[in-house]
Structure formats: C-alpha cells, structure tokens
Amino acid sequence: MTTRITRFDPLRDMITLRQAVDRMLDDTFARGSETRGTGAWLLPMDAFITEDAIVIQADVPGIAPDELDITLEGDTLTIRGEIVRSEEDNRKYVVLERPTGRFERTLNINTPIDHDRVDATFEHGVLTLTLPKAEAVKPRQIKIKSG
Image (cartoon, rainbow, N blue to C red):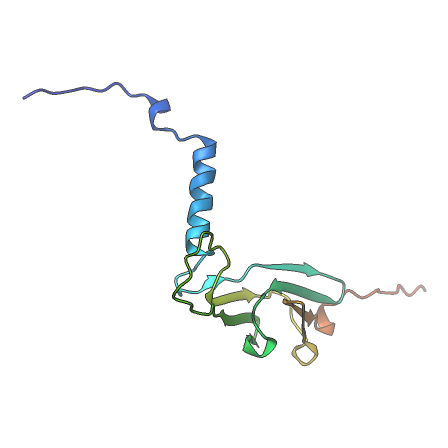
C-alpha cells in the first residue's frame, strides 16, 4: 500500500473569473430565470419612489393583462402569471432563452399605501403599478408660529 502526500496548491483549485461568469450564465439560461422554491421564476422588476407614490415596473411580454394576478394584502404585494409557449413537436431549438411557465414576485411594502388609489397600467408588455403613499406618511411642511 502506497501513501501519497500532495502539497497544498491554492492556485490548482481556483477557477478563473471567466470560468465563474460562464458557469453563472450557463446556469441562468438553463433554468430560464431564478426560482425561489415555488417552481415559479422570479419576475424581474424595477421600483422607484416619488414624493407621492411607489412605482413598480415589470416586463411581462407575451402575456395579456387579464392573465396577471395582482394582489395587495396589508403591506404584501404579489404579482403572479404564466407565460405559455406553443408546443410544436417538430421544432429543434438552437437557442431557447425566453422564460416560460409560472412566474411570481412578492414584495413587502414598508410604507403605508392608500389601497383605494392603487393604479395598474399595461402597455407594450410592461406592467406599471403605482402605489400612492397614504396621507399620513407624506412629508408636510410645518409652519412655525411666532410670539
């Protein structure tokens, strides 16, 4: 029985930055997008704050507005839907990157929202949600009384 001792070489076990990026891109395109335990991919979105509202925009191409399920319960906003690809058995894809299947995104909104004035618009495959801030949290100018 022969025992081999190998000297520790940290460079041997390191991967290059290019290999790491290639692996990350391969994983992303193989799945179509990130998932979070539900089997649904996370809907990518942008969110920004104005003085009066929180605005959320999400790209959902290939889906009709009535196929989206949007709920605001308390401070939890959830957007769900499903993009279905037509099934054609004779297709042999060379590149298949557009996500399909169920998607979902849940956000906790830490600002009180005026639920009665929430607005949702859908144009050119972009969903825009405008969540107006409740009057109680809007900044107010306080006048100082003299005397």
